[in-house]
Image 1 (cartoon, helix red, strand yellow):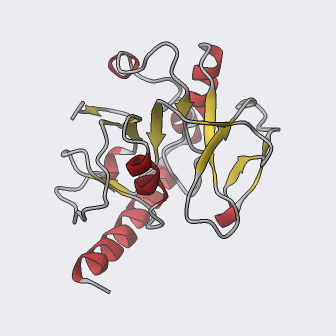
Image 2 (cartoon, rainbow, N blue to C red):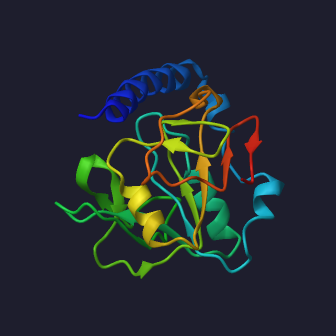
Length: 194
């Protein structure tokens, strides 16, 4: 492993622990109110006809289900990532039921994803999960590189991070393949646009 890989692994471990502890400390009534709809300055960054890419939150990630319901009700097409077994790439497929999630199935890593026959789309706006972030707009993810590869292949997509405030760090070890975000949204602040 390279020095930067070791730094990322150590930071990832620290940030995952901090995120879990933070979410565990939130009363259910409070966490249910957070991330229900994007703040007005974020909405100004989103074209009215944009396909919205979201994610199915797991392991104390900032929840995105409220955004999925909001955007669907606002008339946007909504999509979630799909990873084929054994693949290192992800595609986005339509997510038509963010209320009951009847259109999802379990995928690799135990993450719920759209079925294989759901229509493949290319989101113009992508809400991205993260483990940690810096005010520069950089993020550190779970370590699989799926979002970095997707964003490198789709440079016109506007990538916005969703995070808890506790996930902010002063700086991150950055590699050439790490893709920055256009903005980061937490329950208390919007960082960016960058």
